[in-house]
Image 1 (cartoon, chains in turn green, red, brown):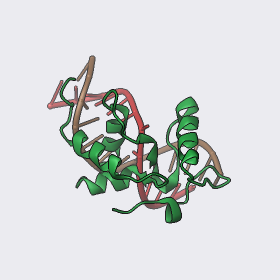
Image 2 (tube, rainbow, N blue to C red):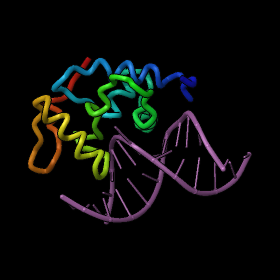
Image 3 (cartoon, rainbow, N blue to C red):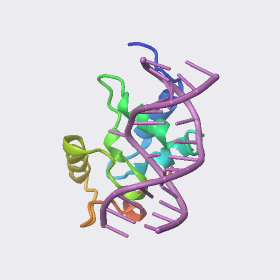
Image 4 (cartoon, rainbow, N blue to C red):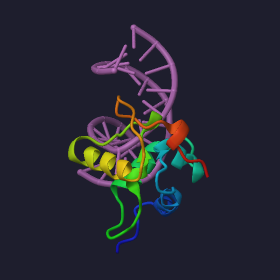
Amino acid sequence: LSAPTNPRFELIWAAVTEIPPGRVASYGQVAEWVGLPGRARLVGKAMKELPERSTIPWYRVLGAGGRISLEGEAGRLQRELLEAEGVRFTPAGRVDLETSGWKP
DNA sequence: GGGATGACGCTTC
DNA sequence: GGAAGCGCCATCC
């Protein structure tokens, strides 16, 4: 496997792996956990470039306010995976971070 | 080096 | 609630 474009991806992937089933976190939060406040975009990129055959629970990472950022098929898949873990969605299609959010 | 791009986020209208 | 604008910053061309 080729070396990651950015070594920080390793930290980001590790942080995402820490999120327990049934809980979610936002891109911004993950960025803060790895010591990169304000770099939510970098987390997004790390999710986009997941290593092959990894068990990283990418679907537990949502946009700010518990919103799903993915469009189309990918977004529906993410929602299904979360609901399968018991995550509740509001009628507006968002996750209540107060109850389903996770703090390390 | 300059400009465009993006699984983001916050404020404003 | 939704669309638009701006800030952010690594990466690519």
